[in-house]
Amino acid sequence: MTKLNHKPTLLCIGHRGAMGHAPENTIASIRQALELGTPCIEIDVYSVNGDLLVIHDERLERTTNGKGRLWEHDFGYLRSLDAGRGEQIPTLAEVCGEIDGKACLNIELKGTKVAADVVYFIQTMLHPEVSCWRREQLLISSFDHRALQQVRKLDSSLNIAALGYSIPVDQARFAQDLGAMAVNPALELVDLAYVEDAHARDLKVYVYTVNEPEDLQAMAALGVDGVFTNYPERVLEHYAQPDM
Ligand code: G3P
Ligand code: MG
Image (cartoon, rainbow, N blue to C red; front, side, top):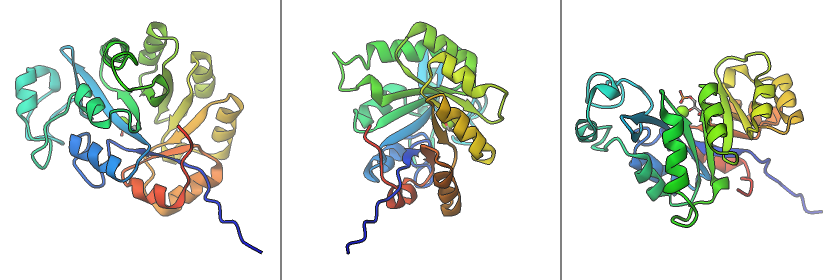
């Protein structure tokens, strides 16, 4: 008798590209994620005086050789900085050009005034008539749920996910009412009740940030749909990937 050995399914989302291998949120990190075969890539995006820049912190010190807050500087200065191993802070357009529809893209909205700028960018630069991107390949998320409401108001069909680092009462109901596709909780907060509540509302559960094998196993056992990870190969080795 042949023994079938099906891998369980768990979507692999590269966190800030593949930040376990390359400087986070850089083109090098995106390339690394693509080379590993990561089907979905997450990045953090700020609108800095109208320019969409891919960076996690509002301050420059942790990830670049710059100083101060993003919006204290002009585009030229920000682009002159070293974001690690000689990489620039990329623009959202550069990241989209690099991925070029070869993976799904999760744009996490950071800071203020970013929602409208990102929706405009998607509606113009990533419109199927001028690019290879399909709408289903895009996911917009944020800890700022008012920003998500703004996205939904501006665009009725974009995929949205509500991020959380705590579990507010009715988070899943809020996401359901917004027409979101997912709730994205912190690893420490996920339990079976959370997953069951989300699934009962037809929401996916994508958990951040899951790097250790035992945590991957625990999340898979709870039936979550995907994980954000700094090491995509650890997920891809053991878990099948859904059709996207
Ligand atoms: O989107 C998942 C994760 O990136 C959220 O937290 O702080 O890494 O942006 P953070
Ligand atoms: Mg993020």
